Image (cartoon, rainbow, N blue to C red; front, side, top):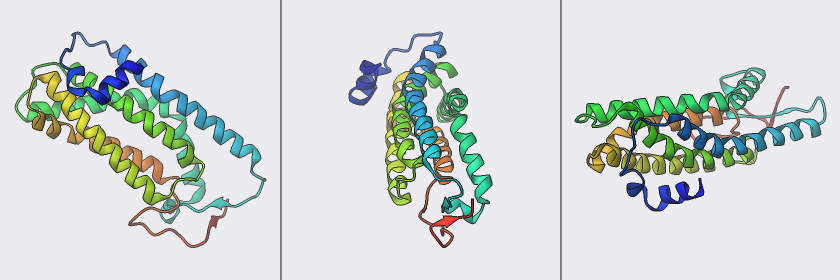
Length: 218
């Protein structure tokens, strides 16, 4: 796993020159789970400790999303989103690969299968999800300002878009500019899903007004 991560970062083009078919999706999903689930388990432990150490009847820290959703509903949605991360992992893998393959097909045709596109997106997705998983811990503990999170998410999105474009280009033996065009859709999906999940926990979000006061009613 460590060798794969190093290769993705230092030699992304070389990592995808060979694409054995049929694609072993189970291997890619195990790679994703190995990187994403440990930070998720640590997050659940941190949230459980925070819940047990918080005095009963204390106020709920104000969130930007409370201008649109009632605090109880937003808190329940946030909890369910966290609990469903293991379920969303394979869903994100298959959807990202499908969108990337559509992008390759629409920009001149794909030389390999949908599974190959999924493999290309999946390995890059593992690196990105590791970073986002670690970032989730301070995010859900209320330690990440909205401005800083947007900057980090934008940077992560650019890295994912760049590496996925290279991975698709080498997998399908096409030009890198075509690969970057095909990588736009899966990148937008990843950024949108991640931001929507984080918005339920961010105190302030650029462009959205936070309701007055540091606390909301429980």
